[in-house]
Image 1 (cartoon, rainbow, N blue to C red):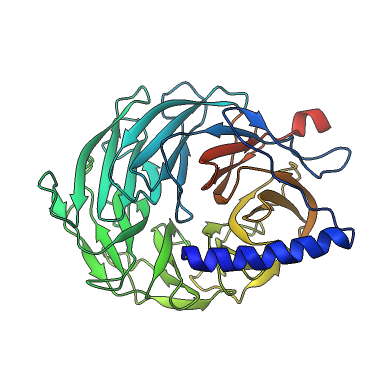
Image 2: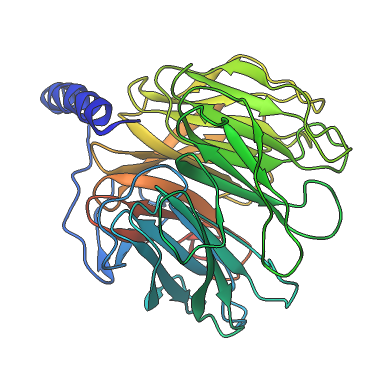
Length: 406
């Protein structure tokens, strides 16, 4: 979504939020954020999550896109860590301590316009590496095994002489998976414009290097790409969020090194974030979107054969920009978190086991949430909700209170 569209949607939401306040509806107000600062919430007496703490990443600049955050155990200490990108020129690495707290360890400069980050072991050394898409390049960041990253090579579209290959297009969003099942991680990236193609597929060699893009025509102006096995055949497929057609394109792996023709699915207008997750526990991946001006999140239920139903709205939520799925209360039923741009809060919706979700609480997070994920930072088996915010340039952590709640 463009800055103008987001500001328009935010303005509408501000007006409605003011009306909600005068009518007696509680709206959580965001607080200032800093390294380890905490914020307020509007939960009941025994909430699922504690108040959020925001950890400043520093040097990012505002974030764009919904894939500006990735997580893995980067330094091998058994605790989950976080990487976050911003448009200035790089990626911040934050180490987790196993209690839900984060600390910045490194800032890696890539190029201007860093808009997405994804993690996988690219060279088979057992350490999680990173791939960052910038406005005119793709950067591969290799991990030394201790959580320290360096730019190994850059695949660029401009006239930078220090590049490995010129990709073409404007990279915006990245997915990593072994698409041809040869044991090496491959790369798929969105092209923000449809020329020379809507998506580029770059085959990995297992050493952290990628080949020339194979272009596929998909969509008009896409904002994110995710990989997952949507038809349960053991091969990774692709889904793309397309702002130009207000839909989600799905490309099913043909199991011969390529993909079948893309299928279009209507999304709620206008949608922002895109996730693939099993939101009802039936073993099939579903599509989830955050609908910034639609005042809702949405689920498209998957049938396990690569097909998805129409959007089922979840909400209401004011200007949601990001969505995450996890079993927050340990009852075996998936729940949903939605990050609202204005006000900057995370709303929690509890799954009822019948493909329905009920609002239970919300918490203030960093200003202008851009990305959201459910990840176990404390090692207790219950996921925390983490978010990356574009205006405050921080990562917020809401620690799961499962052990305290009993």
